[in-house]
Image (cartoon, rainbow, N blue to C red; front, side):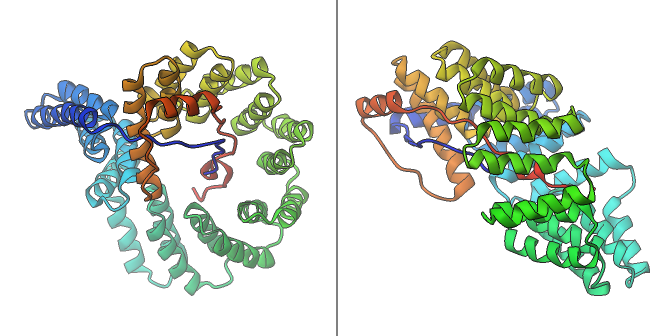
Length: 404
């Protein structure tokens, strides 16, 4: 998932402040757990939310709130929280199990896993039964398990381009771009007029920086299917990287001529407007996206960034708050930019609190210890020199054609 940043500074909170903040959040978690056991679900929900806003032990907080939502039969909310717990700790088995349980409730009353396993037992030589199980795993974002099933299917039917396509998408979702390229090329040799294969081949090439080959694959996609709207987004990204802004906008316009509801084309167009300092147009585009999809975190974040660049700091804070509190509490850059504003306003306590949240999320995502800066005057000076960056690439999951 590409995100451009101009500069990154991570500040660890002073020991005393961190102790106070953590203690408060842990208190919310303890109260929430007790309320959940007593089946006081609305109060428990409130306490888990406060713990999440405090940024402490997010795995525990998201998992707990997910369980409350599940008991309340708020299945979409439950699935979202279990996924967030898994994002923080991919090895959290209980969250995977609860996510599977929630998905089954959403999808069908039957035991979906059991049904698919039995189908394989009854027809172990039927490759499509393994694909069906793989797609189910894919819906649960269990990509490794999905890939294993696709490989078993491919062993039964080595020349099946549909199975290859599913396997390639699995590789893309895991960031295994070279493997994805290999399997998409094999699929294209068998069925060269499979537009989704050509398009996803272009994505895998673009991710590796093989721009010329990516363009060839996109053009092949459009030869096969001239109405493949997302293909023009890739061409626009290539032009954007070359800083050919007007040409990038022209490509995004083509995508929207084919599909006026293509939000990613509109989102990318907003990026170019902002880079050209056409801020009113950029704001208009992002707000139109949010009308269609109020949970589009990148669009909401970019609204905040635009106000930030215009020195309308109160409006910027309003949008960073919206991202962090209502849309995606793990959106680390919202905390980073909010800390910048707090520091410029002289509120170093709030700035430090946001930076410790930023540093924790960043460490969870990257596995690396962040840099440490302690001097407040030095931090303030760096903030004054720093310009917040837009989120300016389409998410992998929104670019790729999915199996389901």
